[in-house]
Length: 173
Image 1 (cartoon, rainbow, N blue to C red):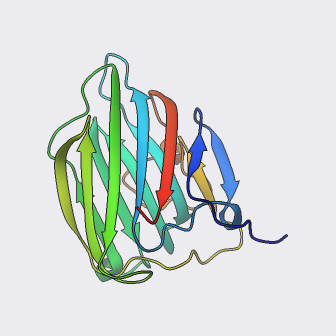
Image 2: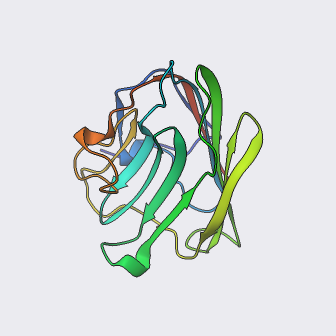
């Protein structure tokens, strides 16, 4: 199987979607992931999107309603970066955005900013983002984290408890 030609955007509707890693956005250099979600009446939990696994991957998720991103460059603590939002997603419909601005291209460090409904709620530095995943079976998942999870901060594959109406990935943002 050949890798798909990169596109300017990737749009997914719903959750429970798993795409082979070589057909998904690479998440190298600058990028943004925007999710239109409905958390219902309780704080939502689970993965909005994940790429790769514990040895090299990204996970964008909610924990008790708080948006978090974990980038694992390996299993070594020094290669795991975590950025969390300081506010929870409100009940009902919301827009959650994770935007990584690279210092200069693939493999370069940069700043991750997390926004809820166009308001910044957190940001932090990721020094060494991954350039590629390590396993041939790695996937880009929407609404869960299949196979080897990127982080142990969730269980049951991090199945998202709310609804994902639309998730968009913009490489090179």
